[in-house]
Image (cartoon, rainbow, N blue to C red; front, side):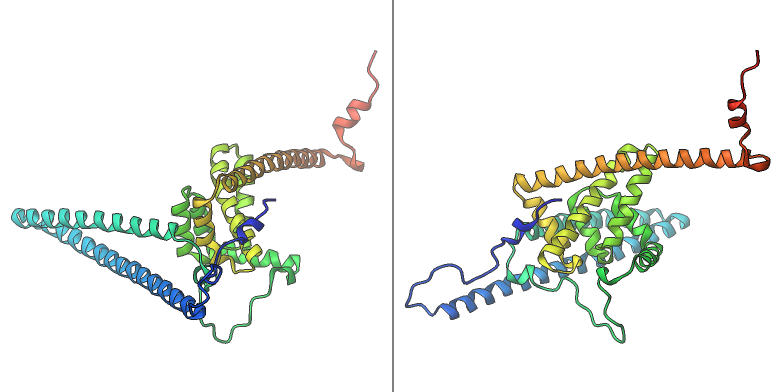
Length: 305
């Protein structure tokens, strides 16, 4: 298993550098902290504004396309030309929004971790009249199985969609939109899916899903090391893996290759087990009176001379 302990050595304090003895150090650190909070608030404001513009853009495009369809049916050539021009201008605006979104996301990835980003609640909500979720180790095997069946029933389509992503950016974005997927049940489902794909000889697709499986397992392990909710470690993991030193990326690649090797071996074992079960089932069908297998009886008869 990969050693994530090095990931815990993150500089998250404002009070580690030296200051002049005549400077009011506590006040200086408070000012620095406040300045950082203001920068984070400004960045959050930019992201919210960009999302607002994106929603408005999507609505305008939808409205224009509807008008184009209606105008086409009524054969309004002049109106059609105006609407097409408006749509082209809107699409140009959309390209600018996409460019701006990528720029903001790049700034977010390059932003160093600090006490306010790594220690803040990734997801906060108020739950009324609902008991706290039991920790996984407190559940019996039967309870775990029932929980996973219920989870897969609700989220199977989204799990498979996540499994088909490849880039770190797309995976991070999707998990941020579907934080409920950052859990052990998703990882277990992906492992089983990989085994089934290998048994079906869909080797390339198995390798693809295996990559996403290891991403999820890294997130879970990071959450365990930091003693955090896995949902709050999604962005942290993808930030680290994209900005990591070669040794971290090598650890990820080595774990991925080892995982695929385990999947191939397990798929081979399952196929052998299935063949043995099929042979035994066929044998049971052949059994005659007294539980004798005609083929076995024939093989034990002496050869005729």
